[in-house]
Image (tube, rainbow over all chains, first blue to last red; front, top):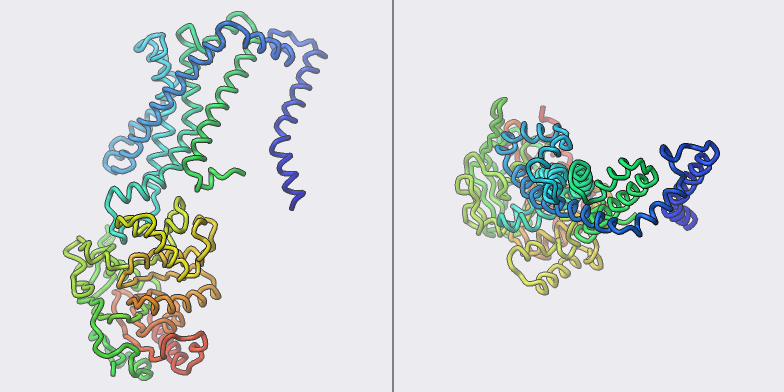
Length: 261
Length: 290
């Protein structure tokens, strides 16, 4: 038992760094041994040097801040609108049926393809990216909330009815609480989608943001710079996702998905 | 003296096996009627046609009486309980609780429904509240302050044998403990009539036996009138002052058997000759259905 627990702890905290170290070591060795063109695949050591350089550069923090703002503001809009739309569609069968083709249709449309449109409509500034981030994050949140509102346990509803609970009481003690896990499941997907939206938005227009930097490094054929920006974006994505899961653990500690394993 | 067969719809010849082991009911003669079911029928209309779930049910239940409602699956016993519980309206007929009509059309009289405590087949606790908050939820909905409702919840948890688990969450408890919590929740606002729909159906045989003893103790401690739905013959006879046998298609009362074994009953009551006889007769009657 004790030994198994210790092994599990080692596996949890040790495995990922160990694998990464091995991958980087093999990568480094292969690049040196086969003298790979650094324009195609730079060595990890080179990427690291470039990353440090980038972090000391004048604009990178400004870029990171811009991308974060776009993704987070867009995401928050997605949460508010997504929860409201999800509750309405989840509650009203009639509305859901009439809206279903539209919802499914807009799900199927690759939303990234709409981004140029938003650039045309809302310009090259930050607002077009926020709208794109909001749109990308909106769908997973709305669909999850809709599912959550429908999934309220009929047995628990019976309890509230037999206790002569008012509509407000039923909402507060049952519907809201039992939908929250779905809201957070949607948010976990939504935050990642919002970040993607912000980055792709920056590809297409504007002059700030990590997405813009990514395109710049590509134009300069700066492969190690490209890798360095990708690393920064991954770190940003990780931090944002982590913040959502922390919010989940604080808000619904009773739920299975929130228990730390 | 209380006759064994009280239902007017019943053909006496069908019940000859059951009518014999009767005698004085344990309730005192002349105690007031708590629950009156008058000519209650229930039809479920679907696209494929109409199902007669209940047909002309008549039953009077007296104060502090423990009624077991027994029948095979699909005989309408749960439907009957849900009508009494104010969850589904009857198609016709009347349910009176303490002399007041529960249903007017398809709407429930909320002053009548507040006298009821319902325990379902599943505990249906709210996983987001700990046990003490679950048990005291009905009081919270009634606007009772936190200190008072928690004090009451602790008393009840002591009564149902859950002392010390106040801060636990439902998922940390066993099935039997969850069901005890559900019973405590139903008792928290002192309902005069306790309705139970196969509350121990999901428990193993040993836990179930123990819960039956506990339930008997609790019911007599709080002087509640109980309607208890089950498909377990021994359980029905062990717990009930009277056992109401429902037959399906359409659901109607086949007969009512008085169990004249003094209460509280110990587990040994199950070897009492009268107990054995009633269980045997009911089994034959249930077997005779189709």
